[in-house]
Length: 500
Image 1 (cartoon, rainbow, N blue to C red):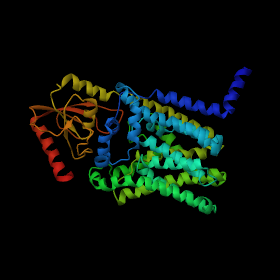
Image 2: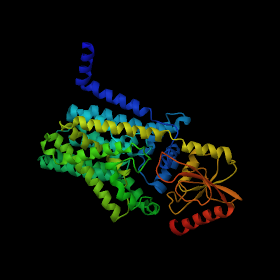
Image 3: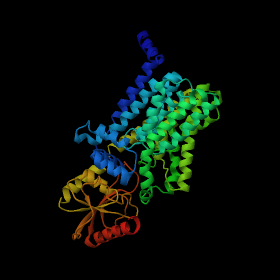
Image 4: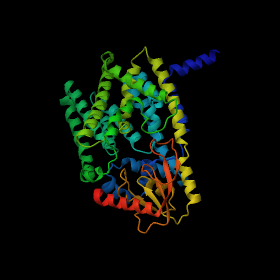
């Protein structure tokens, strides 16, 4: 009994043992959820882009997509490590491993500056917050971007004290890579740099630190500025088929309350996810009225994290009404690890509520885990693929509505698909990564088949309900010659009259 008690005390009071135990547990529990089954349409786009040649990727990035290239290059490297039959697994693994890296960074770098308590709670927040379960598996850039700005925040705060040359180099690299991962990082960095400069000036350290800081800022801006030519020259064209509307903007606040709601169908226990995310948000709000009690170093980190997050969200929200809709609940995920820092700092400095908050996070994490597990191993895509292969001859051209062309390209490469665009279409041109998709160059047959996500099809359809994404069900429909002709004619008219 004494030995067991001694072992328990050793684990409980030894920070490295506790911290690395959390990392191992996170790696194991999250690792079970990595699937080799599902990719939704945006993820398919990411994987197709990563599989493309560098030349084709460059053409797409500089003409039809205009997103920064870092995530696609990173994904390309990770997928290359896996056999082709485990390609989907590799795509999810690319985000999963970044969550583990974020925890390791917390143990090494955050602990160095802010101590055991802050890093311990940040580890738990990374493991249990509902947003982590989405970030860790989605084959999109959000986990990478969030990790890079997390690093930039911690390393950037060092530049306001007595920074070493290594600190400048680390901050420079994190800033530059962050910019090349997502454009919204530029907005957050703008506020971060302004806040860091304000601290340097307030501490009367401008003569000592200011010039070097401004030089670093200028260097980052110069190295990123060539890429800005791409969005500036393509933004008008791309905005014509930008799918985000003001409804998305209105409900962007769901990030703080039920971050998975816009993405997936949740079980009846989703209330645990809502309670966890809402409680965490409330903790951050309460911290804003109590931060004066924190130590000087903690107080500064909290203020910089809260202000940079809030100002970035507010600016994007306002731009969504002044310019065009550009913020959604899922886009806020870009800044999610900064939000985590805000909450972890409050929990670490709130003695009374630690156990209650940990219990809420734990319960919320367990039920979110249950939902994500159901989502990860949902077979609706595979069922649709199997039915198509079993019942539709390969010489039949499939009509693919909007994003269904990505489904056809990835899961049915042996079929020829004709691109049809509806009024709610997101893919209104033929991206260079679609090798098997074509415009329709022949008359429809007597009977035809169409696959669709969002568009209504009047004929009888086989529906494949999804737990993976909210929205209309994926459909395979048998349609007549007349209907096929109308869909294709409408698609052509839409392209000619509105988008081309």
